[in-house]
Image (tube, rainbow, N blue to C red; front, top):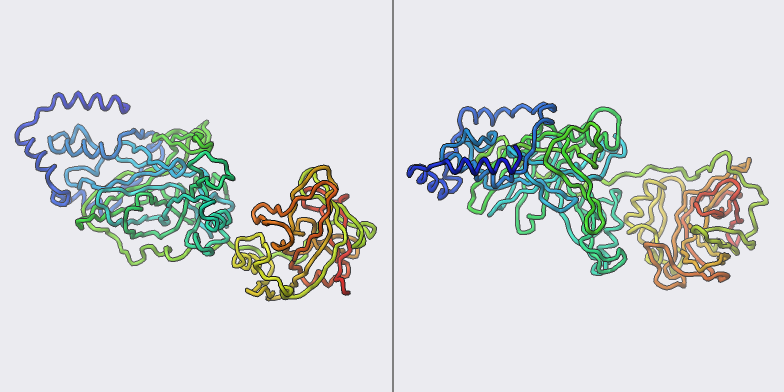
Length: 590
């Protein structure tokens, strides 16, 4: 029976219902009572349900189950009417609204972050959860076990006069998901921190330091991407714990909660196959939610979670973004394509409703709320990186510093580099230069230190002094003349790290490049350096300019007598055989 057929049959059945005066009084009394005043005494069966969770529905049975489109408020209303007039047997909702259970006065609604909308309910009080198509992905099992997985299966809790919700999940943990809108032109500092955010930056910054994930998920307007008035929708994710205790206020209506886990899912797969296996970890889990209202009364729902393949499709919104659209109907995935025809997700069935307080301990509620999760780590890298046995360079290809060698920046560009000089070398910044004068390519020096302390093995203090745990590093001040040898005007960066690398040669001519960091000077003579796009000045065809930049280079490289500057002679940024061209490099006073 589909939804239309149901309503037709239901309407016909109501035509045949004749209410006695006692039944009318019963309905009126029930409507006038507060939910707390109604009979909520549990039967023996209800007491058994509190102590033993219902068995999970077998997967085959779940696949055959049809998820209709009756909204929860309507189902609750009809169940209450049926109870009052003695029609329970002709309209059985599957348990939660039986004669000895409480009528719920809050709703648990599945929320689709992709489309910013509440999803339809299924029949029999089933809550069908959407699932974000990207949901932060699984790069490897090792990363998953350390980082965990945010499923993208979100829900919201709503009700009139709701002041607090307490919830727990028997598997994994719950996380909070909120959304905000950011306009780049109104708050440039916030925007810069937003676009620079990454899992390795967790815990840093002024605006997003408390979140586990920060994602730009779309835009509510049709303005151009570079329009300073364009608004961007941002999803903010924070893991809370297996038990949560959250106060509700006016802003809470936009707050969603989801399921997180890092439990071993078996096997060694990654990608989509792994995420489906992770969803299956919640099959049979219990979600318990207690709502507290302004007058002090509580209502508790116990929801059993199940994994299933649910009908879905990807649809393009008005602003051109692709969104996952879900239909509450379980399907057989054979011959279907995930995210095109279906999605493997969760649905929940309300197994019990009562006016009992939250049944579990709140001692460890919100245990992860105080700080962001640990940032993703970096691996230490070698100071010298061989380019391979096939990559060699002869002495004839290493030119004097006063010579001219070619290099490229972007496709179709052609430049020459000449008069290359290393003006100074020190563990401290040169006089007159501060960290504020340098563009690191990272959002902050605090983040820079987090990165290089793990990868390179040193940090720099607020004055720019380099301190290392093992191998030494030095600041070098570099200067060179570059000329546009091409036929078109080209925007260029003042960061010499885009011109080439610091390299050394072994006895057989094999080349290794250094683990070095390069910085543009923001006071280098050009106007308004752009930290985002690395376009500092424009060179017309035939035009030349002198560029000065700074770099941090390992001492083992700077002390090597074979040191030279390896120019990028193609547009790949990676030297290869046949394109190697270098320039002698030494301190000018040596």
